[in-house]
Length: 241
Length: 294
Ligand SMILES: Nc1ncnc2c1ncn2[C@@H]1O[C@H](COP(=O)(O)OP(=O)(O)O)[C@@H](O)[C@H]1O
Ligand SMILES: [Mg+2]
Image 1 (spheres, rainbow over the protein chains, first blue to last red):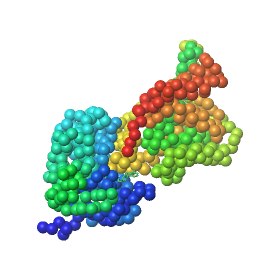
Image 2: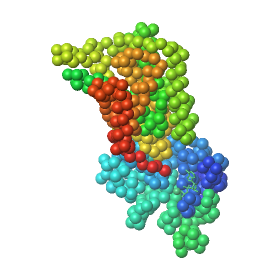
Image 3: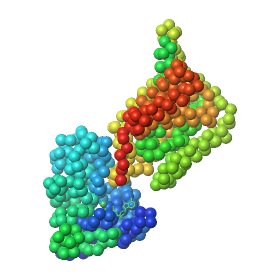
Image 4: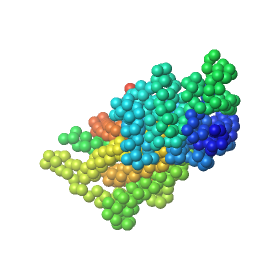
């Protein structure tokens, strides 16, 4: 079956994004189809975070469109994105440091009813038992790995259809990276479509279906993750061999 | 007995500072700006209460409600028209706008009510003076109401920010605006609500201030505004308990300074204490050290 025949869940088309005079994203297009894991890899400063932040409306493209589930969401304000079904687990986690673990999860479910929050919270505590143990602890006191789990759980509180993860492995020990990627696979298994941004190309390509390579604001390569994993240029530039 | 009398006066004045400081501190914590027009909203609130009592002959409760409602609208309008368009602007531009807004309100009051001071009616708070120790210690009704109002407001706000959904949203916006909006929190609306609460409290503060110090003129809000801002910084700007502590301490220091050291230097003593505290604790008594956010 050819994926191109289905309608994409996320369709980013020809976006240009600027920071003042800096042209950070120069006409980027890509698609994420339902039930895929798509990864966007690239060096530091390539524009990966800018791309994700633009999709969620935190930044505005000067040109181009973003469609989600067939609907043009390019000019929706960022606080309306989560109710569309798009969740972002941002770079650097950005959990609410001064709130407790429980409060962070509650805020993740901000747009939902109290009863739904309760059931989602129980689900998260089951998936992330560590968070249950730390329920009443102030989030700023958690370890890096725990903070990443909290950020992921918080993003999942609304049961989003698309989960975007911005460098979830950043700053974590290898064993924790394994664990985080395991959780991403589990979430994908539970029916969440995933757009994963990583500098850790090896890991990202090994769990993704398809991949895009971003270099200084443009997509320079795309294909099946497996093919890219064995592509000489990719190996040289991103896998160190 | 004089000591006790001064202490109570200090707590009462400090309570007024604390209520005003809350407006500064909440707006600073959530909108990350110094709303220098806050002191003038207090003056407007007092004038509106004055008019409701004097010209419309409505009861004090109505004066309170009308003043609070008018100030709430005023706060939301000021934020929407003057500050919101500058959300991405440099903080200096916002500060200058706030100072401009402060003068605008003062001149508006001058235009409407003139420069002649009005005498704020004592009928606003008609609780009799409490006489203790065989008349040696007298506590006015205004003092009692002020201290009580401060306690109620503090407890109310603490519960609001720790329990209510909107209160929690405020804490999120205060910590990380971007992350808050990813949760589905409408940041602009949350900032509006913050201004609404701060301004409603400003009306209360204006009425309490003028009940204890009844001279009402267009500059009435300036000095208490600056002192309350000082109190907010003193306690740790952005912190609600900090505003409470800073306000109370400032009021007590001011009254004691004037009583025991020098009437003329009372205000200078207040600011000297502030400087010493900030040298030792740059983020204020209860403030958290500022962390850089990306
Ligand atoms: N807030 C900002 N202001 C100005 N330039 C920025 C800002 N954020 C990122 N950039 C620039 O945009 C480019 C892309 O950055 P980013 O999207 O963060 O890259 P990545 O996530 O791939 O590391 C970089 O050149 C970076 O310097
Ligand atoms: Mg990045």
